[in-house]
Length: 348
Ligand SMILES: [Zn+2]
Image (cartoon, rainbow, N blue to C red):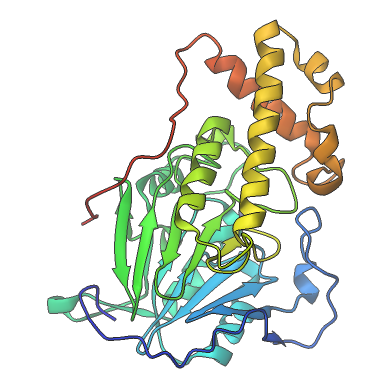
């Protein structure tokens, strides 16, 4: 699995969808929902064969994507730190090959918490320099910036072993592991360090918390996220996703949390976010206060699907994040991009 290798992928990987669900550890677990994180001490990791070479692990804190090459394993995100042993056991039921690349979709701890322990089990082929102990951890430069920044009072420092070892600071980075793996960076969406990862031959895209089909998107203002960037990122994802028929099937989308998605789910999500943004924007332009915006219930017709009164990301928190973001940008020129431009160039 070298970045330039041209090994053809065999067509042997079954294209069956949603067929394999293996409980690695036989302990009962209530179904994962966004507001109800798994009880970590009693978790099982569910393995879902998405299609081609790509699998989705559910139950490790965040969803984890596993891509199997002939000689190496690539992961997208590593879940919560206390789940690494179970996550590794699940990966080992799929492949004994070393983990060579770990790609982080954002700086969030539930997506990077297993970086250290999972990277330690792998190694990275540096080409001329030979093998290097530990997997390469790939992320946008802003992830490294945030991990290395001095922790605030509430935070604890991130250990150096969890830091990205290979960062990119433009819009795109490519890898190869018996298929092309294209990493794109949407600007300022969930955070300002997001990556979306497209496994081109398997036809699966892993998008982190830009898509969370069971709750409103987390616009992490403190980490550089923005509502307009979120909508741009959703459009960027939709550009890649090609449905098979009736807007379903075809390219599959692995979200940061929750169930596997297809184009239909993502376009519904994009429409919802756009409509709510427009409603709140109108109220902001009218000069409404945050309390008035909340009283106007701009999300009401969607709350049954995406809303939450409790948990880590409530409807109120979403409305507040959008309100504050739009209030800040109210007097600035319209920063909304129409469509993401085609990217070119490659990291390194
Ligand atoms: Zn997350």
